[in-house]
Image 1: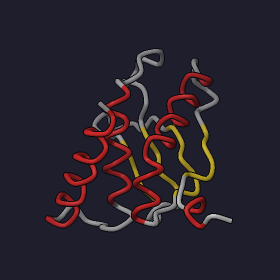
Image 2 (image 1 turned 90 degrees about the vertical axis):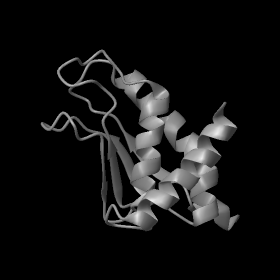
Image 3 (image 1 turned 120 degrees about the horizontal axis):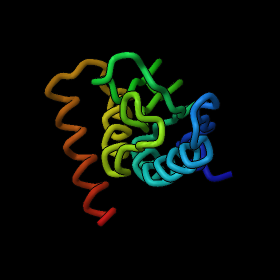
Length: 125
């Protein structure tokens, strides 16, 4: 077995109570695939990647337990069919992955996030 295969998103779940569940799942799958090379490089794992819709409209993502569960907001608040642009969700995922290495939002965290953005968005274009 290739050990690189361990460093990935293991499970994906979209919200079942929202319209467009299949579209949400496809977005999460694309996000997981897009960040897999970065996850391999840093030896990061995410057990569960899921969609969430928190009450706080400013909250776009959450990383629980350094990758045990990453939650991403895919839709604009109170607009269930209005998904955020892919690049914005991808950037939120990069932000949440940085929490696998750095808990607080400190200089090391932002340095890593900037590095991941350069790699990801340079290769994505």
